[in-house]
Image (cartoon, rainbow, N blue to C red; front, side):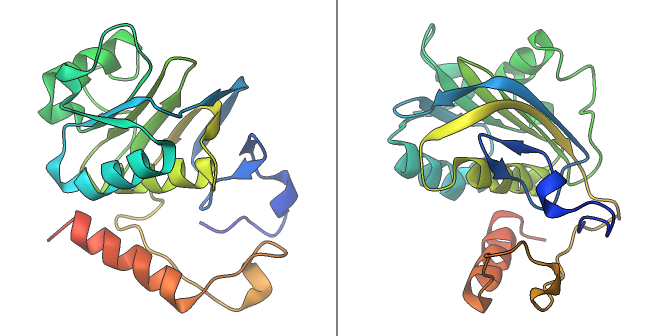
Length: 193
């Protein structure tokens, strides 16, 4: 979803000065920033292993394996599919992010950044992939992210991307064929048909 002509890029919601593109369906800022450096990271979804490794490398995080094996009382990043992981389902229910179903449709996700945790819940593997992409955008090249609650799903049954000339890009941004192709390659590796 590109921003409608009436919504300027500068008007799009940000967290810690970072925009998420495409603009999520719901984006609430929490008014604080957390440094994810060294946090434990776990995923219940084996197809997300590459994303978990990249996140650990970017933040200096430690891989905890499963969500159930996260160390108690320490900050953590947990991601996966609540429908397939009881520990993640319990975390999501405790924080009222799950009430029998994810409040996002197919290819959707919920991303909750609190002061002691990051929960990324995918409605399916594709949704988790897109949630990871949003988290990576929020991190940028650093290890800090603004507290937020994001719920997103595609407007159409299949999420897609359309890259056009500079007319629809934020000022000063660049899109290379390699970065676009890399995103799609990563997507198809993470979400085989």
